[in-house]
Length: 161
Image 1 (cartoon, helix red, strand yellow):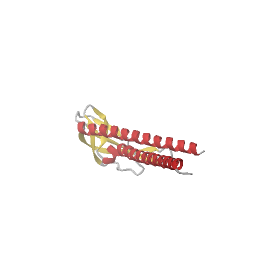
Image 2: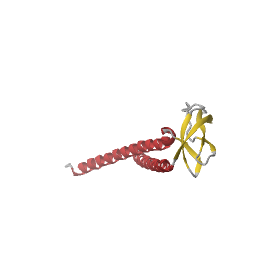
Image 3: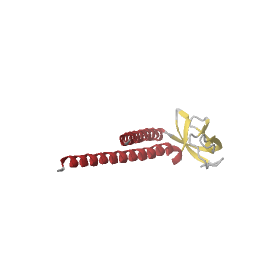
Image 4: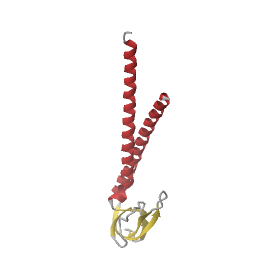
C-alpha cells in the first residue's frame, strides 16, 4: 500500500510539473503573438455598439462580450465582437474606444484595453507558475523523503548489533 502511494505521488508530481511547463509555454506563445500583433497594429477610433450575452457553460451565468465598430484606413466600416467576455461588462454601449487592427485583416481587430489584450496570456502564465511550482515542490519533497529513507536504511545496515 505504501509503495502504491509513493508511485501515485511521484506520478502526480511529474504530471503537475509537465502541466505547468506546458501552460508556461502556451503563455509564452500568446505573449509573442500579442507582441507581434501590437508591433504591426494600426490604431483607429471605434465605438461599442452592443454587449452580446455569452452564456457560461459551467454555471449558466451570462458574460458580456463587447461588439464594436470602427472605420479602417481603407474607408470601410467593420463590426467585430471581442473574444474576451466578462460577467460585469467592462464597457458601455456608445462608449468611444481605441481599436487595434492589422491593415490586411481588419476583421481581426482587438480593443486597445489591457485585459482584452493580455487576459489569456496572464491566465496561462499564472496557471503555469502555480502548477510548475507545486509540481517542483512536491517532487523536491518526494526526493528528500527518499534520501532520508535511504540514509536511515544505510545507517541501520551499518549499525552494530
